[in-house]
Image (cartoon, rainbow, N blue to C red; front, side, top):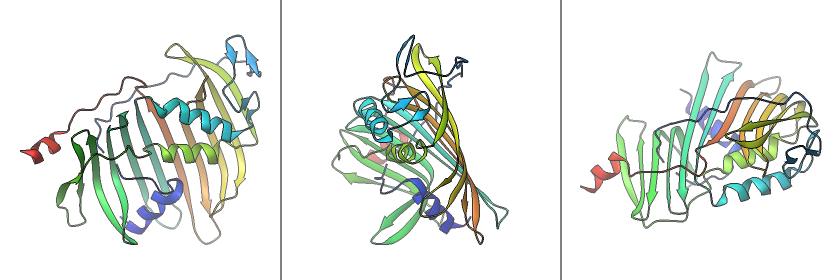
Length: 265
C-alpha cells in the first residue's frame, strides 16, 4: 500500500481533526421513500430545514450551524467511508471510520487507516482505536512493523470534534447550484432528500463531475451524505466515493473495550 496516498486521502476533507476510538460497526439502514413532488419552501408537514429551499441549499452556513446544534448534545454513531481509485495505478484504497459518541466525556472511535502528525512527521497506523470515559483516554494501534501497541494518554480530555470531517463535507459539497428536494419520512420523522450534480468545484486540486445526495432532517441534521467525483489534472487523477451516515441518534452507548480492561489488569 502506498502510505503517501494514505496521508493525502486523510487530508482531503479532514482538516485538523483531533485524535480518536473503537466500534462494533453496527448500522441502522435508512429506507428511501421520497414523495414524488418537489418540496416547496413549506409543505403539508412543515418548514424545510434551515438554509434549504425547494431548489437545494441556498445558505450552507445556516445549514451547517443547524447541523452542529442538532449533534451538540446528542449521542450518535457516525460511520464514514471513502474509496479512492487512482488512474495511474491498478489500486483502490478503502478507508472506514466509526465514531460512537455518548456525551462530552465518553466516546469510542476506530479506523482501519490513520495518519498522525508528530513533530511535523507523519506516522502511519493500521487498525487504530481510541476510547475515552471518565477514567481516562486510551489508544491502541498497529505499527508498520505489525506490532500492536496501546497506551493511556492521561486524564480525560474534552471530547474532540469526531464529526469535523462530516461538517467539512457539508460545507463543501452541499453548495451545488442545482438540486432536487423531495420529502420523505424515516423513523417517524420528516426528512428531505436532496440530489444534484455540479461540473466543477474550486479546491486545492480540481474536482469535477460531482454527484451528491443527502438526507436532511427537518431541524437541519444532515443524516447522511454521499458524494462521487473526479479529482486531478492532466498528469494525475483519481475517482473518489465518499459517504457518511449518522445512526442510533439518542440511543448510542459505549462500553469499555476488552483491550482497555486487559491493560488495566
